[in-house]
Amino acid sequence: MIRVLLADDHAIVLEGLRALLDGEPDIKVAAWTTDGTEVVRLVEQHKPDVVVLDLELTTIKGTAVIAALRERPTPPKVLVLTAYNDGESLRSALDAGAEGLALKTESPQQTLTAIRQVHAGQLVFPQAARRWIEGRPGAPGDLTPREREVWALVAGGLTNPQIAERLGLSDNTVKFHVQHLFSKLGVKNRTEAALKYAHGR
Image (cartoon, rainbow, N blue to C red):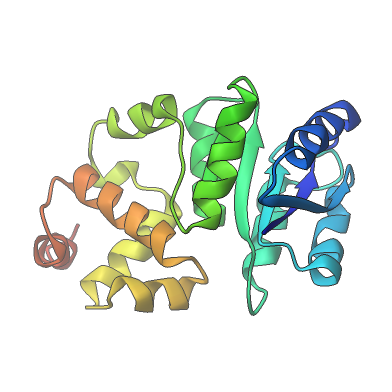
């Protein structure tokens, strides 16, 4: 049984999500809130497996909520649900440490699938968002602060699990960052990435 916590400041979206999830035999809505500042307390109380979170909460930034959740000893998986299919939303969700992104404009079935996939340890991003990332021209100047951190640690010889532990991210999120780092830098492996780092980047 997948225990889910829902956080969205639109009550109507919450109602729709609750109705959708309540009909699923393998998913239980453990709690819900329209107040982003309540999420961490509710997670402590209900211990959900997956938090479905809107990035655009009125009370607190969704990224701040994700960061607070990542500091917990056993953080829940986070699926960001957003209306914005742009690169910035995607990057901010990824950099904060979310495991997935689902669009409010997609079919409800896709949201259900995304919850199950994130719970199973997969990284979930819509095709359009992937295309946005992959279509960007690669230059070290293009790296996000998080990617620069990952690059420094790769250059220092750390493995993905070690990087994940150091940065408080999941292994999957680190793997995703490393793949994009390689494609942006135009390198094929960790050794090439480390060499490029050593040569003044």
